[in-house]
Image (cartoon, rainbow, N blue to C red; front, side):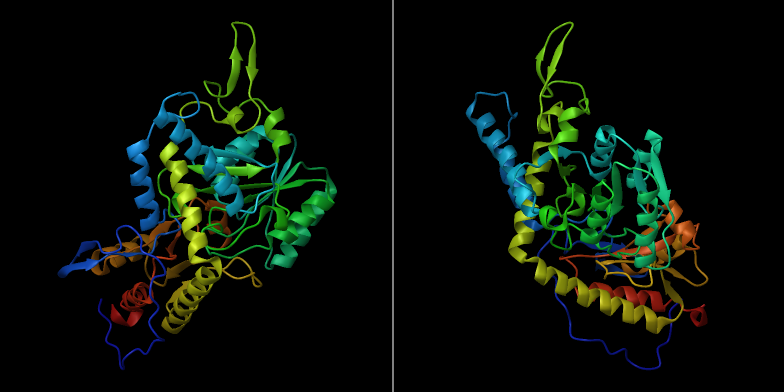
Length: 413
């Protein structure tokens, strides 16, 4: 499979990783050579832990105890840390002072919670991750709008749907988990509000890459996952307006959600506790707060510049190859985060992913990325390949991917 290059490939100046992440120096076995440093290009599935996050989470273990109902010193310390995490997260995403911050298991869990409290129809696009399709479909109140060739045309279609009949909510992704394309969230929020609807934003693929402000953008509900935010310890977040959350039945029935329990009557809490029954994932919550602080320390302007340079390097390299075809939803996308979906002529997605892994020590994702309708819409119902990256990625990782893809050129077989 090895391609013979006629001349050396000249590439721009080397770009170094912005921040250390766990596992950055791990070596993995490859066919026909000594182990290679693992090139993790699968951040969109689960990002590695920032070293700062792993260190803070490990330190919290020494004072770990139950939260909210313990009188002991460690329980008090852990409760304070858990509740402070809410305020850290609220500030991180520019939440309003009266927003409720609910900790969940992941983005999917957060959207299922939102679906359980939404009092009416929900308008969604057909390009969504299953997490922002299936919970609404299960309610029987989802109205799915087909995306168009451009963002502007798609917004026009959403406008028409919201005008046609009342809806309680517009639920949209902020950045595609297949292509990385970003939607204009503030514009969509204004559209929803003009029609008397609220907006829920799936921020799973945007929050780790760009600054988000609930208040400034006009977002009513924002959901995201810790494991995509360099805090892979199994926790998620829903931040948003309290009235629907307080009016709905508790998401889970159990201890912590209840203020008083009798045989014939139950008094449920309001606020976050109403939907956080049972023992919470304390360490997961602490890790999310630690990640929020670490990313703010790095600075989203630096993060954006870093990822933009890597995206440009990857896009230019793919364009030069010719036999690798990038996926795009829109002709006028509002930029991209560090995600690139593509297919390779003559190879199945699994063949490409296995070649990258077994011969080059590169980790990518292949398949349909929990976005089956979108892959079918893009003309690839059998799936594609996705490379994704972030603050722990350098140009060496991107260059290794491009060199490995060059070996799959049709003339090399």
